[in-house]
Length: 235
Length: 286
Ligand SMILES: Nc1ncnc2c1ncn2[C@@H]1O[C@H](COP(=O)(O)OP(=O)(O)OP(=O)(O)O)[C@@H](O)[C@H]1O
Ligand SMILES: [Mg+2]
Image (tube, rainbow over all chains, first blue to last red; front, side):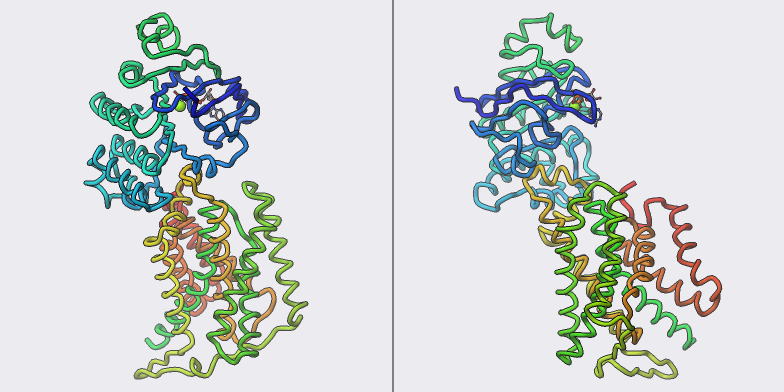
């Protein structure tokens, strides 16, 4: 199958530090690809480099066959890539409704339909439509961040550790909602929570010290306790 | 009592003029993290442009609108050619915008006159109303009304329009705004132009108020506006309004009752606010 996003030997420096030392990965359309790795492995930096927020200095990034590594962040977003950052980046003084309003690049039927759909997945957002996003709970902020990225007709969502700091029940709910999105959009998910991510992921990449060290189907990772132990510290 | 009302009106009118300058400064800083020391130059250009247009057209409304247009045009050039190359570098920004301030002020002398110019109050707004023993100077009330209208308009735009919401979102998180597919540079330019236009409006309004204009007139007001932005909280329009009123009133009352303190008064006000709330009255950041 054709790849949607193709990253080749991506290298990123932050100041003088060589953070990404050659990341190569493919994201297949219609799948949930999970990027694993321990703290500081470079997962967030990988997503930021794809978005052009932390531009890579070497390597290539292809989107539907077109090279995007030189584009500005807003241009990359307009190609159809939605970003859910690790810190959720709420516009804390804007309400849920206002956030959705500025997130929408168009206000056509399709976008409105997507908004309806995601509000049905996250009814809390409907309930707190007029509440400032800065006042939402941690889980609700995560829903807000996902809805904001989902509402446009994006072909790929980059979601950075949505489980961070949330209760297991909330994590489960989020994972289910991401799985529901799979029918509508491709997902590149960063996670450390193997048990949760394995329930929805199709393919995985394992990252360590700025490099991809393993990759394969999720089933392969389920069967390989050694890799999990070595890089995630779990059996 | 009458004296108090007069001081009140004077203070509020001055406050509104400072507010018009502060709007641009606070938004430009909040959104782009740019310290624009050239802002006072735009104020002076608004004053000269307004006086000139009033002379040519005979219409004060045309003069005010023209001043705003001149301010926005200068703002556009300033953002594109001067500020853009130094985004993200505060030291260069200070040097470069101070340079702009000087250039703008020197250009006024070349374009118009090296000597101060006289400015008249339009007939419709000259004179005063007498209510009992209180004398209200019409033009000062006019300035207050315009200031309040601008405040309301800016609030409305920032709270109700999509572009206004985007500006506020940009103040809170620039990266995320871009990650939504929004070209933030366009927003920068727009905000810069609006801020410059309002600064020029302030200058055009001040001219008949003070009766005389000179090329360095922007300096004093720019300093007050910086104090206001700091007291009010960077990026906050409400904060700027409140702080501008405080600064205006403290200026007018101190000048009357404690003239020896009038210069230090605003600084004192700033120090007190910063000691109590380092991010300013309405400061969200910090
Ligand atoms: N702004 C920065 N300045 C310097 N070093 C940075 C910066 N941002 C990230 N790093 C370093 O880059 C490395 C990778 O960071 P990154 O945030 O991509 O890791 P991560 O895999 O997302 O980790 P986590 O699971 O903790 O979120 C880390 O060693 C981190 O310290
Ligand atoms: Mg991370």
